[in-house]
Length: 309
Length: 309
Image (tube, rainbow over all chains, first blue to last red; front, top):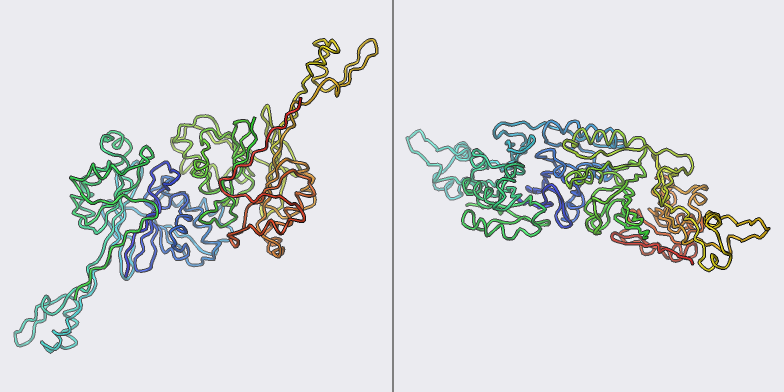
């Protein structure tokens, strides 16, 4: 039942020797979702002991090279490793041509089909779901069409307390009612309150990824209360003008978004190559969002399951 | 006056954590020629403390991804770093579409022009030259159109020995004759032999790159006598059938080519991911071409200038 973010790349436009372009793998209960796909992602995946063949679905935020150029090698390697299952790739519209160009020049002999799903959203919209999670896309404010993604577990059905079954002498129908979160109303007028007899087995977990974006008022509301927010922090304080001109955020703006959204944890990344060491970022936001995490290649951030009984 | 090969990648189709796809930089007197362009090449160039902006010309052997996918990030980074000079890329015909597709999707704002020169050759042909070197392309035998490249310094003009000038009382015209490599014939019938009065200041150096290829009889003749031969050795002995079916060479076949071509030094690379450790390769060819070099990422092979006086 894990919900784990693996950081594969924290660079912005210019990669460095130890800083790879943007990519993360979110492992939700063993299903691996790749979010962004910077150059070298296939090697970063191996380095992190994740399985290329187990990659489930890819989500690309936007079509700048530092978020995209790893797709070529990754798809080719998947093909060579024998993938046959279709690979679903969620990305802005322009990815369609990029993918078909790629398949024209390099797709001979592919035994699987990469399927492009066009992402388009003016506010958070559900674009993907499995039995246990759903993925929402929401627009970011960048130089080109860009989307953030939120991954959240679905609210689980409630469990009925064992002691309540005996205490109230619950019928199967009544247990079903309680599992749906409703109170039980008996013919004799008795009410069995849901809160008394049932409980959520665990709290659904959530992760939101915002890269790249200038700050804008709606964003905090859209990522409200997530367990983990990855927010780009391309620049430190003092670089507001450059951040504004390039449609990026400063670390302060990232922290303000996290604070306003009341997120549980903030992880920062997408650092400008001007700053090989970003440890001072944390000092700059100590008064806004203390305890933030500086993403680095190879980092694994686990969101533990909070179980109730 | 250096002539130095920098190994950036030694993987074959599947890269590994410590083995990058094919790429080399040949530094000829400070001009940097990139040969093949596997994924991650821009990071490998930085890792080796070479300058991306100083890259002069690119030579691509063939359009399999493991020799090509690094071009996207490299060109984008060159643009971001402010390159304005055209970048000349020698590659098979199909690269034209790959490049124009790339420029369509990612070329907005490029301030330099990547120029594709179509390579086509049925035997060694000169495709490029500077004042000091020339580059020849020759066909390899692979699954798709593939070329090897030979880089060789031009034969330098001869120098006239200082003592000969005094001893023979040489005129300026006679010095010019000797520099061109001719003997001097005086009106009185005296002959001043070129070998007596002039000498080559240095021996031209040469490097040939053969990846990927099945063995074929003409190849040794085409790379005859080079100072350094990089020959793919995808497989060890015992894998002849697989090598034949995939149009690759075994290490033995690579060594036989080097022996038959009487090359000074052989460097092996393009290793199959089946063999994370290829040190046993050298035992297999000890009787054919002893002293070969196993290429590895970060390796620098210098061909020193042999000066005469």
